[in-house]
Amino acid sequence: METVRLGYVGCGFVAQTIHIPNLSALPNARLEAIAEVRPKLRGLVAAKYGIKKQYDAHKQLCEDKEIDAVGVSAPFETQAEIACDLLRAGKHVFMEKPMAVSVVQGEKMLAAAKQGKARLMVAYMKRYDSGNELVKKAVDEFRRTGELGPVTFIRTHGFCGQQWTAGNSASIFSTDEKPPAGPGGSNLPDWLPTKNADGYLNYLQQYTHNLNLMRWLMDAGDVKVRAVDFDAENGYQGVAILEVGGVRAVIESGSMSHWGWDEHTQVYFRDGWVRTEAPPLLLKNVAASAEIYKAGKTQQITQALPADPNERWSWSYQREAAHFVAQVRSGAPFRSSGEDTLFDVRAFETIYRAYLGIK
Ligand SMILES: NC(=O)c1ccc[n+]([C@@H]2O[C@H](COP(=O)([O-])OP(=O)(O)OC[C@H]3O[C@@H](n4cnc5c(N)ncnc54)[C@H](O)[C@@H]3O)[C@@H](O)[C@H]2O)c1
Image (cartoon, rainbow, N blue to C red; front, top):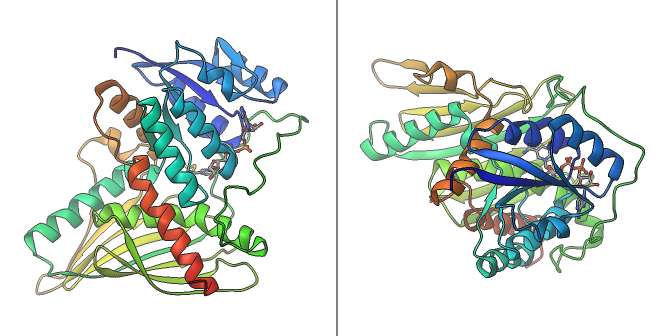
């Protein structure tokens, strides 16, 4: 495939601040169509990016034979249903996280992909951050050589903050049009009490990033859950103790009125650590900082930097979009495929069941 002909569903916040600008700027791809149920918003975005075809809703985009692949960002439960329809229609899909709000919904999506002979990539930008790529390389190398001894513990911490946009949201269009109603919770896990749905979704949508990163660093699939303790008033502030790749791992989750972004992930070895500190998410062209500490006689702390300055000053979301187009063109597997992401969806159901004491 020379040029990937792209469509996009949804012209909301994430589409305008991240994916439509990034996908439109890629070589080897052309953003040719958008689907958005709000006509004024759709028109404004289409005009800004010179997008030829406009559709009222994603179902029409499914029928467009001149489109190979489609990006999607919409409310959690809705975007999974949109992705299902696109996959079934044979479009490769690049979608925002979380992949699905339940294992049942996730499995339905993978079945749709099989039916349509199409592939699903979930946009976990942390796996494409050039700083995190160095962290992954270092963890792989230390695990292979044993230089720092075995991995003893993993921590991912995210108290987040109020400035995740880093000022990068000022110039987007908004209109007075009402967004459409979604499926109304019909895809949530059947064991989840309605009163806990908000807590579950808040936890899932944020910390899926952290678990997905830990699993990648450890080449891990299924995750065990050892214990969970959250605040009852919001249902997500607290600690989950897991086992990732056979190692004890914690997710520290919470929120604070921080004027920045408070998030790091650290892999401890017996004789050192590898640590990544995340930038505010929408801060462009700044990678995560990657620190390597070696204990023992030398006691050395280094900041790992990419050799290429274009990778040093790069934006993870741009790199994930480029990865999607490159893998669609070549047929090579995605680094964050739907099949892999289903492990996260399953883990979050297990974590939340453990929190609520539901067997
Ligand atoms: N990766 C990240 O860092 C990150 C950050 C924030 C949000 N997100 C994810 O982005 C998603 C939310 O995106 P958003 O904030 O842009 O949402 P949004 O609500 O602002 O926009 C969604 C748009 O989709 C449109 N829409 C809904 N159903 C449609 C349909 N069937 N056909 C066509 N258009 C339809 C709506 O009218 C709306 O304009 C969430 O899933 C969230 O998890 C990811």
